Structure formats: C-alpha cells, structure tokens
Image 1: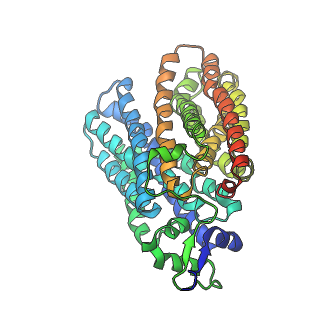
Image 2 (image 1 turned 90 degrees about the vertical axis):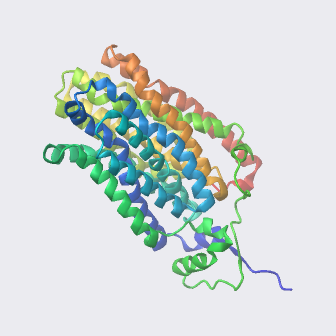
Image 3 (image 1 turned 60 degrees about the vertical axis):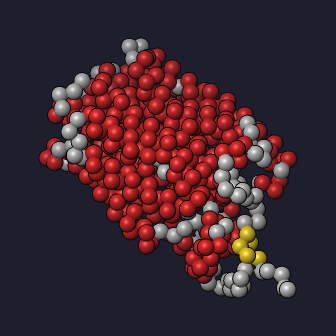
Length: 450
C-alpha cells in the first residue's frame, strides 16, 4: 500500500505568506474585540446615572464593577476549553452570544442585585473572546507573522473600551443609561449570528480534526489556489507537538514547569496596575483640581494609548517576544509614576502622561495576550491562553481594591506606589525571557512553533 500523502500545514502557510484569508480573520477579530472592550467598561460609564436614578452611594457599586471581572476569570478558562475542544469559531460565536444576551438583559435591571448577577454572567462570555481571537489568528498566519497578526487582532480592545465614554456623553442624556447596554448587547448578538456563516475556522485547528477535512480543503483552495491537495492526504502541523484531550498538567510540560506560573504572574501584575489606572485616574485627576472634562479625557487617553502602543510595537514584539515585554515593563515604571506629578503640573502634562501610560501598560497587555499563548502548541493554545487571562484577572480584581486602600495619600505618592507592579513585572518578565531562551536552546524543535 502506498504511503499516505502528507500536507505540512505550517510550511504551506509560510510559502503563501499574507493572503486575503488572514485579512478576513483580522477584520472579524476587529469587530469582536471592539465590542468586547466596549462591554468591559460600559458599566463604569453607566455608574453616574445609576447612582442618581437608584439613589445609591458610590461605594455600593464596587461589587458590580468587580462582577464582570469575576465572570471573566472563569469564562476565560471555560471558553479556552471550548475553543480547544469544539473550535475557535464555535467559542467566539458562543462567547459573543453569552455576553450579548446578558448585557442586553442588564438594560432592564431595576436594582444592584440584578445588575451584579447579569454583569457576572456577561463576564463569562467576555472572557472567551481574547483567548480564541489570539488562537484563530496565530494558527492561520505564516510563522514570521504569527505574533504580529494576533497582536493586531486583539489590539483594539482598549479602543472599544473608550467608546462607551462617547456614548455616555452623546446618547445617555437623551436615552438614559440603558442605551449603553442596548448597544453592548445587540451588537455582539448580531456579530455572532453573522459569524455563523462568515467567520472562518483556524487553519491548524481544522488540520487536527478529521471531521473538518472538507472545510480544510476549501480553506487551502482559498489560500493557495495553485496547490492541489492530494486525495486522502494527512494534514500535519510539522513544527508542533500535539496532546490528546486536555489536562491542566499539559501546561507545565516540555520545559514550562516554571514558565507557565510566571506568565500567569505577569498577567496578574500588569492587569493589577492597569485596572488601578483605569478605575481611579478620573477621580484622582479631579482631586488635583483639574476640570472633570480633563479627568475624563485622561481616562480615555489611557485606552487610546493602549491601541496605539499595541499596533506600533507589534513588529518589535514579534521579533523580541519576552525581552521586548521586559523592556516595556521597565519603561512603564517611570511613566506611570509620573502621572501624579503631571496632574499637579498642567492639563497638557497629565494628558501626555496618561497617553504614554496606556501606550506601554496596554501595549504590554496586548503583547502578552499573544506571546504568552504562543508558548503552547495548537492543541493547548486556547486553553493555555484562557488560563493565563483567567488567573490574571485576580490582578484586575485586586488593582481597584488596593487603590481604595491607598486613597488618602498625596496623588503623586499614590501613583509612585501604583508603579510597583511594573517593577516586579520587569524582573519576572526578564526571568521568563531567560528561561524560555534556555528551553528553546535545549529543545530547538520548539522554536518554529513559537
């Protein structure tokens, strides 16, 4: 019997380079992560109206702010498992449906208890978008563009987070706080329904599952019309080791016993610092006697700076990976520490400082979302990314709470303390860089997979 013909999937993608297939995935990811970012921050912009309409104390909204973050903690791991078990496409569609339905339902909340549970359930879906968006783009890209395309795909999460501010300024005065949740609920539902027809699946995920052979052959024809797929060909991902099923223990094998928990720590440290900044900056800037409009603009520029940072630095991150992230952590320290002094100086100074804080802090987050996921093979990638984001959410929950404990310090000292997670992050990231370099030196066959 003749040997079964083999199609090497990574080589096929490398030989073709960038094509309309990858651009289509980027376009789909753009809309999904944009509304994902929108839904993360929508509650913050609804809060002033809720305080007034429901006669609340501002502090009583704390659990509601944390609810979606708790949901994301569990949703990232769950939908990471869904992505590896049932496909990145299925996980993205169901993630959008889940957070769309529960965000829409939040528009009809009448008290804090209802809002808390609906935000928590919406968080489950929100948590599933980034791990699977990273996986679907990285696994369908040529090797030299895996990190770049995936960073571009998720780099607009901060931009989405800025949109509720504009909605709050223009539509909430006439349509009420509910409009924030109507938009945040209806849009992802529409995206999910259209994605059932239009969203492609990850090339490498299809290669691992015989039931998707027909779709895999159609995808190859779209990417490489000149490439005849041999009858009964076996699709292999020649530069990766694959695992049957999933066990969390797999995330610690092949030299990852120390790297995996340290990457989890990196996520927690960066998200801790970021959520402190985004939660408290508008309030703290007001305390420095800046006008409320300037304080709000400072918060928005954190988000905008993050998108700019991710997109401008993606090629550098593609090349230097954890070393580039270590440098960004180190640069973030003086930038974040300067915000308090800038707030006491002038409007221009504080807006510049907050923009560059977002540039580095959220640039780190977009980069680590991708670079952290790429240490795992295709069969583990969505799970690995989901666990990273899920564990990291502990930091996002802690950041605002630690900030509350520090409130009362002079603003300039408070921001100096808020830079501490980035000091630790720089050290930990450099350790990860050295460990991963040693791992790849000892196991050179793993290098191409990243």
